[in-house]
Amino acid sequence: MSDFVRLDAGLRVGDHSVYKADVYRNALEEDRSAAAGLVGCSPDEIALCESTTTAMNIVLWGLDLRPGDEIVSSRLENPAAVVPLRTVAARRGVQVRWLDFRNGSAEAALAFERAVTSRTRLLLLSDVDFAVGSRVDLGAISALAHEYGVFVLADGAQAVGTTDVDVRALGVDAYAFARHKFLCGPDGGGVLYLRQDVVSDIAPTFTGVFSDAEHGMAETEHIFVSPHRFDVSTRAVSAIAGATAATMWIREIGIDTVARATASRRQEVRERLEAIPYVRMISPPSDEGGLLTFAIDGMTPDDLLAALARQYVYGRTVVITNPQGVRLSIGFWTRDDDVDAIERAVHRVAAGAPR
Image (cartoon, rainbow, N blue to C red; front, side, top):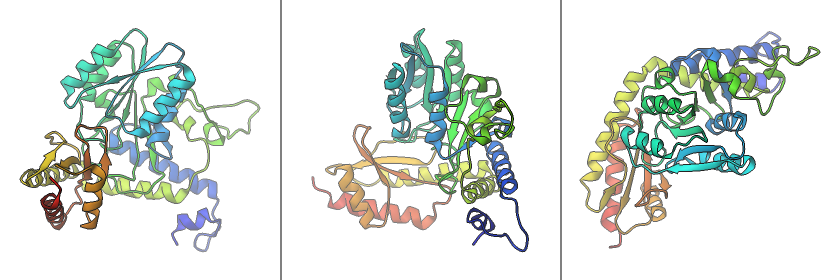
């Protein structure tokens, strides 16, 4: 049992009594620094939370959205963003305008410029979309959005751990990600980056002792003016420590090394699948990210997913694309024999598919 698990259970660590609050506080600060170093910002611009979805909810509910305001997003967003968007829109009387584009920064920027109006307050867009793994030029889109006075929130769940992410260079106002996907960490390691000069634009929806610089012990509240205000309350220290370890492991390997290996593996799998009869690639060609979506003629996504699972290849269905398909996650950790296994499985399934 690790020290952190023992601490969560209220047990002694080693031969010494440990004040849990001190260990908890130290774990938070260590994780905040690790996450900040991964995406190129200051620890004072980082809030720690349970998930990417939680991070996006902090922004969605914290912005002063009013009836008649508009949010712009894309039809390739993950349901983890779509559901909160719809909920906020219904509660606040806000309209969501959905962008249609397949891939590429030019298409995304043009689609946004056509959709933005004087009532647009927020743009929510994935750095790398979950459906086909395409990456837009967030830097260019952020600059365009800011010309219209629009707040930019990015979903980085599928980008961090597959490609280099520098949130300051991207120019976004907020960036949400977690550590349980391509960073190989545990659930519970969500992160929200907030640019220092926009923190005051996001009001805390939930608060707790960790939101207050005096832990609620003063006569009046002293809510942090940094993203620390969104930490709220105690979370599992073991999950935080696991997230830190995963983040530091990726940083030790080097994100450049990770990005090159991921792109190389993704391209190798793509080329092998493209050579198999009846396979249709849905993901566009890309040199970034680790997601690859494809279909097999004559098979539904559910049937394809089940057939691949019987060959010990696991993915997920994607039903918002045309055609619908199955998505594989390819990382720097994908081995030569994994690539061979994927090729063999898809070849067998495609050969036996009904026509």
